[in-house]
Amino acid sequence: MNARERIAKLEALLARVTERVKAPRSVEVETANLRDTTRPPPPADVEVEVIEEVRQVSEPPISIDISDDEVQSSERVVAAPAERIGETDGERMASAAPAEAAAEAHTEPEPEPEPAPEVEVAPEPEPEPPASSRRPIVLESKLEDLAFGDAAPPEAPHTPPPESGRQVASPPVDLDFDSDFTGVRSKEQGEAEVVVVSSVPPPPEPEREPEPASAPVDLAPAQVAPALVASAPEVTLPILPDAPVAVFEGSAPLFKPASLGELLDATLLL
Amino acid sequence: MTDAHSTAASNERHVTFDLATGQVRQVRLGGGERLVLVPPAALDDLASSVSVEAASRFARAIGVAIGKRAAQKLGSIDGVLAASLEAFVSELALEVALSGWGSLSIERWGRAMVVVVEHTPVSDPRLIAVLVEGAIEAAAGRAVRGVCLVSTRGGVARILIVSERTAERARGWIAEGVSGQDVITRLQTPGSDGSQP
Image (tube, rainbow over all chains, first blue to last red; front, top):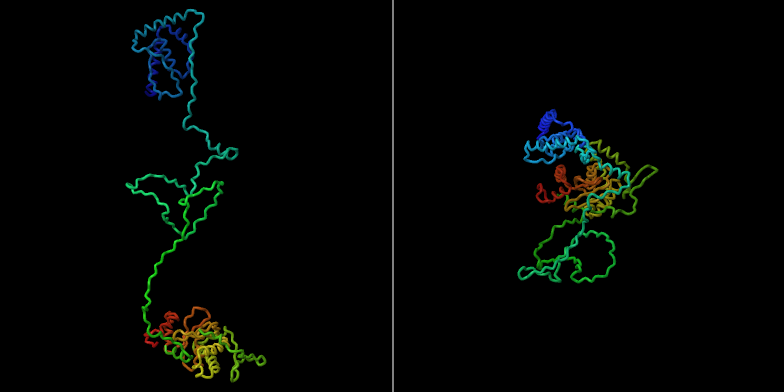
């Protein structure tokens, strides 16, 4: 039901109430009594007032279905008393007769009217501000604290990365394999290890802080790292025959002039 | 290469400056020969201002005088031809040095004879080549031609001593851009241009 339908229903209801008010009944007393026993409704509670009046005049209550979505927080909805389902107009009129009698009885002077139970109106919760409303910026206060206050420096946003370096190898796990089926055999002690000799000098190790003195640990021979051994290439030399493989006959012509005349003749013959 | 200075002459006086008469004389066995001290710039100006033939004659005349003095020390032309290479280089280098034309030495590349003159006073190596031609012709009595090989060092002239016919071939190769070492190699290679090794 939208707002227009609701307004239309309310207007129709108001018209019916107005007609019944104009009817010749003793409504003034009832209304006066009603005004005495009930608190003046807030101007916005038109619906509540209408419902109360209807209840006093024993009119069939008109229930208006208003969903929670349609009712905003600015409106206050008061639940109507439970009505008896299946009650006909005749029965309702019958039930209204004692009420009129009671109203007439109220007209009689009484020592003190019974105070009407006050309706406890719960304080309306403060409506939440719309999403577009201004909100305080927290960052500015932090900046001010950092600049002028004695606030502690904020924590690092991220944890530092892990330090690089050698990782501690996990201790070997003793696994029991059945060598007959799996082929896994345990490492024999004293087995030759492959040592890579590099010409590039290893980088200098960073200075380590002296470790606290502890009791000397006796390492087993297998746990001691073997010393680096500079491996030399194994050269296989050929076996050459002793016999001469080439024969030189004669000698290369060697010009060695004994005098200037010989050299001069030789160079003029070129 | 023979070092001319290693076999330099004794402490004998070779040049006399007569201050009274204003003469410079080179001592010779049979008397003295007058010399003139000329600045090198004047020689360059003279060589550039005159024709190539005139400059060549001028340089040849100087070389002939040097060769004659060397031959006179070695006795005669026969004495020069019979003299060892070291003896001839020593006398010739001494005369060249006394004249102020540089330091002379001889290189033998196989059969080729190359005269090297360092610290030359003139910038044109062709004048040195003509000077060496005249000195050897005057000393040994043979008609030779000096071909200036391309030199990479400044102030050094390499003169190839060859015959007139071979000199023409060598000059043609040098004009084509062949290096001096390749020219010497080609001349001693059998069958190159029909020459005889």
